[in-house]
Length: 120
Length: 385
Image (cartoon, rainbow over all chains, first blue to last red; front, side):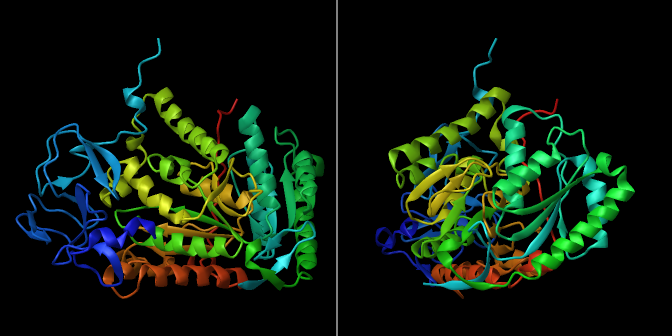
């Protein structure tokens, strides 16, 4: 599968059964592409709990449920956010490293009919 | 090459089930159809709120969906029940079904002189059709004759990591053996269309972009953010934040082969290989559209869990995560959560899905089918008049 291009991810531990998926050292989070701004949480994180990718440690700023996303780096308001190496939305407020990344701080860039100019 | 034992129909299509379908041409015949179904439990029935006071493309799509559904290879014969004054005139619908090479009979409530007489005649005809269908036998068929619909419903943050890529692996195997795979729910391709277009010829890519633009144009015309309805509240609770994120995960269902064709809702693909169909993301309308387009088997991935089934086609459920698989065990068939648990690889789960498709084609019943769930809904594209 091209989406889990393993060679880009050397140096990171991985899910044993899916060798190309980069897993945090304690297995709590999954970053789908090396350059992604976010990782997917696999086991619920408590506030203050740390995850580590390589030399980088990220501390959860809030409780983050499994299947949800954590910010791996600071994201300025208005910046595009990437997961799967692709754009999944735009920060609607400044997002700090370790923050829960979800509808409260991310807006979609597509299907935004609410932003269309009113037709007189 | 894989083979299965299916039903070869006179019109050249192949079925994996041998149903007799009782179909109301209009919602006014729903109750009569229900009574026929209760009296003859060997038939399958559908109910729907369509078939009258519809015009233009909306009416054409409704009629195309009913005719395509009735002519699906999984159906041996059809009894159409009409009222008599409906827009979707029952005899014209039966003519359309017959033109597709399907065995069809038709009765009308007004012509029969009321509901009781219609039910009596309907029971008689239904029993006759069931008797005829019993003569059909399974014969060896090639996997290249399968059209498999793919669907995700109640998606969560794991859909794009486990179940959808595993289904994509199965889709690649099926396409590799000459079969056809339908990727649909176009609103859930918004944000991922460029990745599919890279695998398509310029005309096919142009048609795909046109469908995506239709979705966003609808959102603009309504001055709404799609996120108020899709991703749904459950998708958001499951960790999906925007339609782009949902789409990028959803697109994996189609695998990695060339996108060969883009078809309209309920339109039968003319190509083998990977095909995109223009359906909404709404689960039941999507399911009905793919089956009306000829899909004999559907694989449905779900993170939140859903019991959806079709009255005429096996719907195989793939859970994206183990906790939901355990919680809704009776509704699930495959656990792609095993990929995250580390007990199975993505390819192993994909191979399990592929095997399930072949076994379902041979007659094995997935959960939704053994529970007897038969969902049916036609996508409307215009208002009732």
